[in-house]
Image 1 (tube, rainbow, N blue to C red):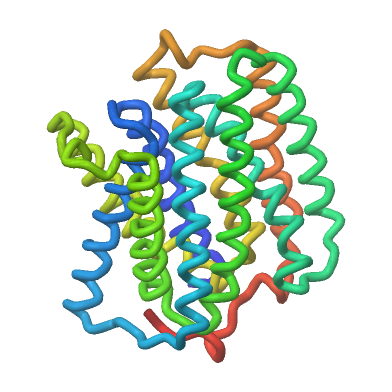
Image 2: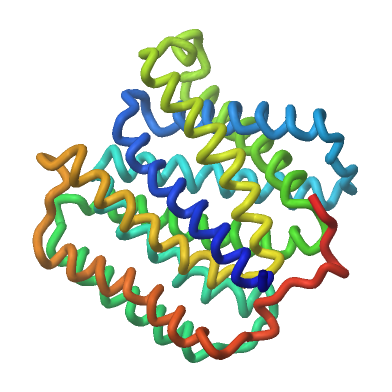
Length: 304
């Protein structure tokens, strides 16, 4: 199978899994910070067990660990603002707004990856801005949730772009393990600073534990590794844009599970459709044209 097609299929499986994270955020009764702490701890344990079992870990130089620690901090901040956005608004608002991640990636790539200017990405970025403006204008009561989701999108775009650099040198599994460890440490420090690092951290409903275990293992450990791995063959912009399908899955599931709080105005869906429509425009534009910059090289990447 063509490497690009294989990685696109893998990415769509991961996006479907990511689609449930918003639902889990809605179902849990604990706050965003506690969710992210347990998510990263459970993910770290899962990834660490796999590394020990298959002896896949790599020894990294101090500078690489420092870079991945910073990316772990970005990931933790991204998830905290993401779940806080859901708590402040709802799944539909948070997921539709966070689809703007691709816009931020299109701004980061030329600076961090030295990628040449692409008019297609500028066009898609403009479409995202228009869609966001429509959502802002009709859903003012959810302003806090929208702003938090935008911050989350900016953070997601940055760590996705930085991971595209890391995966050229190190395995996706090692990168993910290190970033989850540091994300857990940073979140614990944040909880301690806010006086939340107490015994109450371990006290929660049994269903919350179930959601957190699923979130930490399937939707984080497994999905995070694969989402980093596909960056070997796909550009960060394509990955971020494909992940825009996450709101489609989440919004549809949320409408079925929480119809009383998830039904939005027609203008909201119009704005969301413009943002998500950028994905299909990108797919059409790249259907017959393959950008050499979007293909990774085995010569600069180690197998996980």
